[in-house]
Length: 172
Image (cartoon, rainbow, N blue to C red; front, side, top):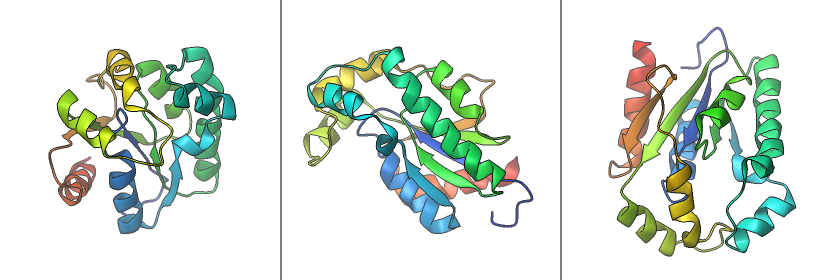
């Protein structure tokens, strides 16, 4: 993985509670690539809305996605590969993120509503309340056949997901 000639950017996507951070951190640890948590790019107004249980609009997400795209572009220009967490719920959001580099690959972590709800209920210290799960699932547009990426069940152990990501990337 580290011997690539051009940068690669893995975007670990999915709704809240899908395990994006866990899988992305495992990818970062295994590759040594630069890591970004998309939640860190939200303006304060977005965080406040989510904390209050108000779903974000496309207008709210625009500056957030632009900032994240610019972060990926900066890594691309520096010749660095990266691992990023981002819900990337809609194709339009993923299209925006793809502008960040020549090789942006999405890793969609997918799970059943009950599993996601249970995970969110056991989380503390995160601004996204479990009450927004239904809104996120309603917004989610699965990866299209023409999009560069892979879908994994959150029922798999994170280490197995990471192994499978590397297997699939090696086949590309």
